[in-house]
Image (cartoon, rainbow, N blue to C red; front, side, top):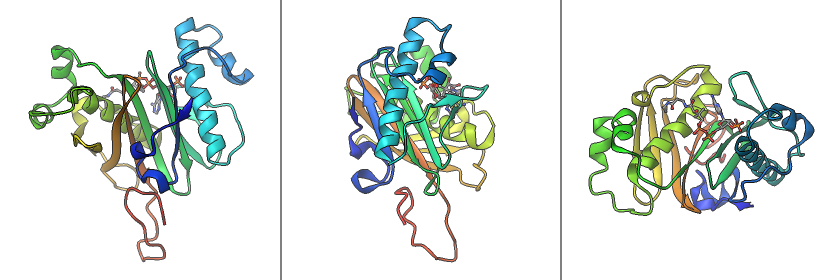
Length: 234
Ligand SMILES: CC(C)(COP(=O)(O)OP(=O)(O)OC[C@H]1O[C@@H](n2cnc3c(N)ncnc32)[C@H](O)[C@@H]1OP(=O)(O)O)[C@@H](O)C(=O)NCCC(=O)NCCS
């Protein structure tokens, strides 16, 4: 298990988010309350669930917070300790989690997807014609552009859902990704503070595309703080 490359974090090395990633997908390290949630699950689900939570625990420790179980609500949205926002994701080969202080961030979303191209019919379902057009000439063969765009949509949903209790279809999120790692998601419906644009980063970790978006807290518009959009720093 290791820290996610800080270049993948909105705010970079000096930002206030903490993210960890692992390629050891095993059923290990669950706290009793977490174990109870997956007692009846198939082994692969337990392994992915546990691996994401080991990452969450490491990220919480990194943030200076005590180890606490990360449970979920009836809709599977993770429940973080008071004062913390976070997100988790797990694929077949990689699991990851990100956390941040709720004083700086309204929400964060992380997603991992195998770095393989999506089948054409799936691309047609998940990406708008405009998003597909923007990918013409995409020059990062190790990270299929369609997969990066889809993953950014999932990261956006993981911010939108807990904050609004709402739903997004794939064409409710218009994604732009730059080959060098920037990502933005424009939402068809706003977050509670009126924001419709989310900023973030993407990269490749251990054969997986990892995307991460974050919504900073909107601070005093009268200028009590000098707030740099997307960095979470005041
Ligand atoms: C929730 C969802 C994003 C999870 O994605 P996934 O690829 O199935 O799984 P991931 O491994 O990436 O993420 C799973 C984790 O997401 C978190 N999660 C689940 N539902 C969530 C929600 N509504 N909001 C935020 N986080 C959620 C959980 O921590 C879960 O892990 P856990 O069950 O071990 O606790 C997806 O299942 C979904 O419902 N998407 C919305 C519909 C959609 O695809 N719209 C198009 C994009 S806008």
